[in-house]
Length: 377
Image 1 (tube, rainbow, N blue to C red):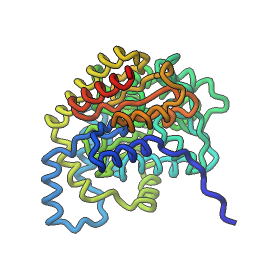
Image 2 (image 1 turned 90 degrees about the vertical axis):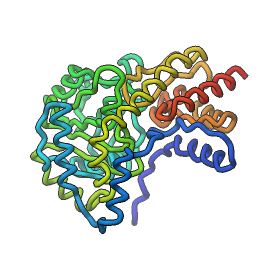
Image 3 (image 1 turned 135 degrees about the vertical axis):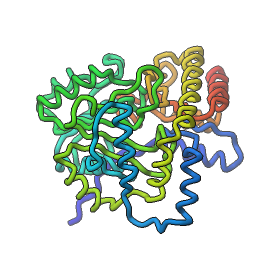
Image 4 (image 1 turned 60 degrees about the vertical axis):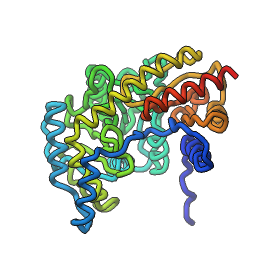
């Protein structure tokens, strides 16, 4: 008898997005703030390189040694750490990197601890792979951060801990000391630490710290989707301990072969387009400031500290106890699409919404105006 498929929860923001795109197809005006993706495209020079490659390369299975070397240099210049290229598997986006990590490093029935609220695909991917999910409450009481004290108190210790800084949906960041405390407690309790660093580069004060600054006994996930504005190119990477490099290479080759060749060519060029990419950050900075100024005027003031990424995660429990219905009504009546908190927090997310401000500043201004008028009405 074939066992039933593992049930995982829907990604509700996708449904909001489908409604928004259907409205757009009918000619209605929509502002997309529901998805965690830049509204900008890949850097111009990266796109130009892709056009060249399409005419000259057969685009077979391939893992670019030059791209891996460039990623290694990135860690040396930004974080001051030496990472051998053999420790850097290239993979089809951070989503593929998570599947690869969970499959290569854990067995069905193992328990992995994650923060709540957190990225829904963590929970759903773990469930799909028959791993147990232990969600740790990381609300206002902990500053929306996962703490070493929470991990130290777990009995029994989980097999793994997945942490993100900057985090999705909150944008909160761990200090170097806080990250070091997590590294220490995981080492003492034999917990494999996985550090999701896909929002590195997208910060508005102090820069984000990599777990690799503290230890080599960590698995780091990163991607070209966020800072490099290449979400649709589906390309990411991992940094793994030397002892696990061969295991990851074996699993990666069997599960995914290689990531898209065209994306690898473009990404190598994208990594040197600093001026263009930093221009996106300045746009996000303006958008963040605008939202932090105007949302409280509407009575939306209970906001997680958006230290990084491009999100505002707000408690609107004074307006509704069902933010999924709220978001569905909001997009139909105003054209403003935002994500319901239930995606990120199955227990308390009914009171929260997430706004993505990775759109243009005029779009943010327009969306805030529509929202304010709608709330007044």
